[in-house]
Image (cartoon, rainbow, N blue to C red; front, side, top):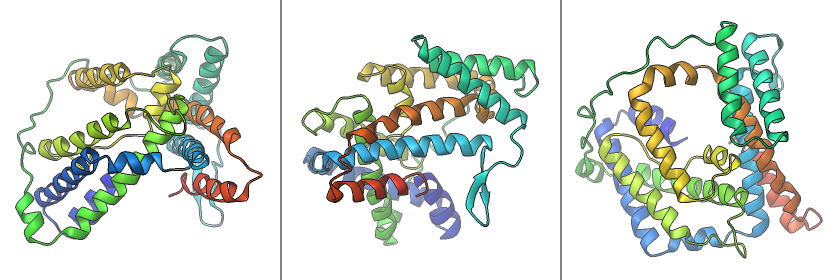
Length: 308
């Protein structure tokens, strides 16, 4: 994604100072702001056909599920078939993932509120009991200083060195990355009305401001993430969901030892990703498969997204 492009292609591969690369991110963010204020981005999103929006939603679901299966090692690379099922399905992480998946599905079938979250907690507890998940070594930790990266971006260097191709890459990828994510998540949340997303401009404005602010704080392009679908699957439908999530993220900085321990074990998070993938795949039934002019681009979109 954009983080990999920023790190491995621009900074390490091209030898561009990270301060200059942040300047390029900042410029792309300003361009986003301009396009958002003129409603060009909103027009692009609303112009996407209904069938493609459903395809994007399903494709994102397949991508999320694929990430979950790959992270835990159920799907592995293979020289002959590109991907394959893990040769040893008795690996403790895989077994813990299967347990978490079954528990989460059972809770959802019984209509338990917060089933995905409770499934992750139960998986973590069982993992610690059987030694698959390490017990956190601490609880509270002082957050690191932002001083090394805060406002270290070099906008003028990005302009003087003619990094327009890099700026365009950040701009182009983020433009359609955000569009796809916004459409997919909004479609899952059933927020689309007449094939349009009401108040899409507000979401796009938040995305644009985040990109600009992120560059100032010292991080690569901040964009909308497909993992937001997990919040929708848990029942989130309003901006309050995002605000609460942001607040919890801020608090998690102080409890990094716990977060680090659980985040390092993909068996805890993979069941949630797989479940979200299943829920988003429901969009497939909304596609007019008998109409080839809609079915072909929809199929290609769905097929490409998990591997692109």
